[in-house]
Image (cartoon, rainbow, N blue to C red; front, side, top):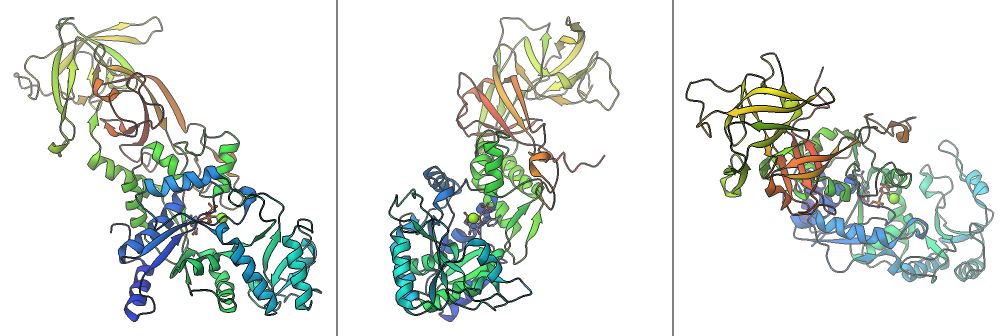
Length: 554
Ligand code: ATP
Ligand code: MG
């Protein structure tokens, strides 16, 4: 499977576990919290978890880690499922919810209390912080630590029954307040939160913490390899402690890998949510966001995203990946697979004075330069055409290999023309170029041996169609928008979106299906907008230019 290369260190661990018989089947899970849309970092985790299960003939669950109702919503539950499927993966069995295990978690909390391994603590947040100690100083035992089991059971039941206010009490594991690992200093297992939950409604007013819930979710589902990002490495002793002290049905193990960070990008649901909420972008699926739905609308393909995740590999260190690598993966995929078409973004009219007004020649053009199986299309060729305003100069040096007054150029997929004169508009700019065709030059050089200076794209003015085109650029002009002291909201690129309302497209493009990808020749890769494109009102989004213009030196 393309998504899991053998160089991935987890691949080697699983191969060993299967060979030694430690596990007989690989079961992984992708465990998002439904508190935002998935982003490119999650894509790495999805490719990893689903990819490993596929590589070893195992299973991968999709489980919502929905233990924190305050920030979660059904909208996110739905979008996450759609994104995982779009990336090309299917989970094993039903969608799972941590919230479906709430009663089991509670029963296990009671078990810990009964065994003397947990207690109800009345310290408020500030006192708890004080008692916790620091990295260099041990913590102190809470005055509630030696509460009798019976009193703890009673208080826990009353927490559950809603007798106490939010924040007034918590359930804590009784481990070691002097542990050098802060996560083992009597960590919180349950908090009181009088909040309705999107799955369980008002059934609960106490909710388990991530640390208490996660390993138990894994154990309930029979997960063999619980893969998470490196910041959870110090939580692993607690993960194991809980599994050891509870009568769980299986013993998962946690493994950590380095999260994906991309330069020029923010990958945090909270920060992405802020860009959405403050209207910097147009929703979670804005094509400028590194959300999976944003990348989709931008025209990225699932195959390119999977290939990118494969390219960056899986290691045990946190690094920053150059976003140019992601762009490279997209370009590579689209270069190979996207049909070619012509679109003029800044139309300048060319009138072919030797060509009758009532004549249309239908030319054929291949959809792909090297893949004949992608077929061909027909292009109307007429007296009035549009070329790009940047492709014409009245006078220019030899370096300008496009149309110049008195000189020749080849029209892509058509004939050679020569510019004769310009018609100026009221604004002092060239409004129209008058030119003539050179006979018998479709697919051939002119008979007199004069080679045209270059090749430019064009669209018939009378046979083409108007389109709206959105030119996207990177959302941040700073390579580390959220690093250190940087305020990412202040580093937004003001030119990340340019709207072109009167681009001109060849007629076959109007028939494009939403989400169909193209290379607009000489311009870049574009996609028919997923929601707004129609034959009557075509809309295209620029996925990426043909070349990386950000890394071009001066
Ligand atoms: P965020 O910080 O964006 O909210 P998160 O880690 O809180 O991310 P979760 O919904 O908890 O988001 O993540 C689901 C899974 O995706 C977790 O296993 C997490 O480790 C993984 N994940 C999240 N961000 C990244 C990333 N940048 N690179 C790799 N994996 C990631
Ligand atoms: Mg999170």
